[in-house]
Length: 512
Image 1 (cartoon, rainbow, N blue to C red):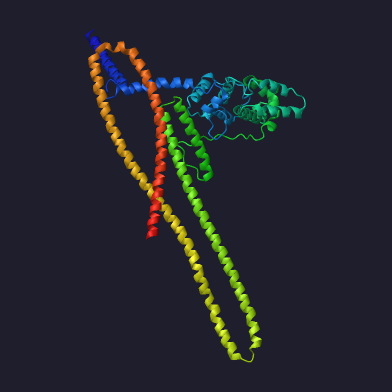
Image 2: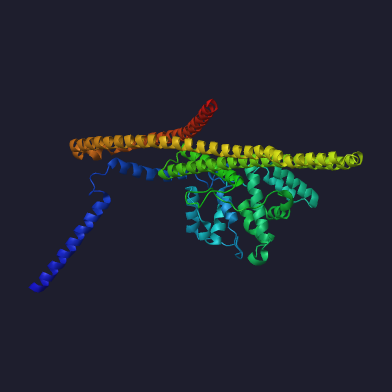
């Protein structure tokens, strides 16, 4: 009927309106509704998104020689084993048959990809079988076993020796012949497995079960792995399994409060900074890496400033303590002289009385004369004591004033540097706007002149994009190294200007 036809037509109209809105939404997402947006920025983002996975696949952590894996995935506290192995060792779980179970393959592959992409990983969010499967996969994919292809047969021969002392001595000699990275990895893995066997009542993983489960992964026999576990305390007496504490990040609550903690954290941050520079020089140039680079440099600067301030405070406290000790020693010597003087006066007084019995008046006058001398001695003592205390206070006050002056000068230099940088930033922004306007005009002219011939230029455009990508990588590397040098030079210049100002002020005060 006509009513039904009207209802259908209204429905079709509503559907058509919704479809138009949906199409407009997709157009907005695709950028069609924002003509002011720079198309070259979009191309750069797409190129970077396509480029990063290739870089990560070219510089992986899994399936590469052990030394290369250590260099690409460092523990920044000085332990030369790959970070993925350290994290798996730190993951302590009482699960039964922990190394016999296999984790979900998709989760294991996800963790593998995250480590290859240098992402931050929280293994606590995953099940123990997934973590142990990741651990086994890394060791299984090593091109060469931990004991190396050359020394592996000799380890097998040493494990077959029946005499306990001879077997231990031969194994120790072979362990010392291993490369440094292999020796560190073997020591941490064996000591970790020994810790697992110490809890075999809960996890059901004794030495025999571990040897059966992991000897194929380590590319060694059951007997050799069992022998290494039995001699682990003799082979690796200095190894202590400690939980890894990564370097501080921007979200960390606060910096360490003692000089030892600051020095240790400074070593971690410098190790991380060197690793970032190596990765960027190898091609890992991205916005996230640049942000991490700036963040690490900022934390290093804060740590150095805090360490210098603590060292100044310690030096001032030490000088104050030494002055107090010297003052106390002077007071002790003075009290000793005073007691000796009193003792001499008491010894002289009885000697005078028998010799002057016939002259009582003179005796009385002598006693009157001696009395004032004794009574006037403490004021002279007090006068000699006041300059020492005033000298100590003046030196302490002078040190505090000098430190305050240095901080004020440094603050003034930083403010001038800030104003200079702000002016440069404004100039750079104006230049960017000018170049964007020029680029938009040029791209509009090219589009209007070329028309539909853009499809025929695709091979040339792709070739040009590849060339620009390589040039961009080189420029990013140069920029990062130059930025780091500029920051270091600016800090050095700032410190020198502060020192020169202090010297000039001290000379002016001496002239006055």
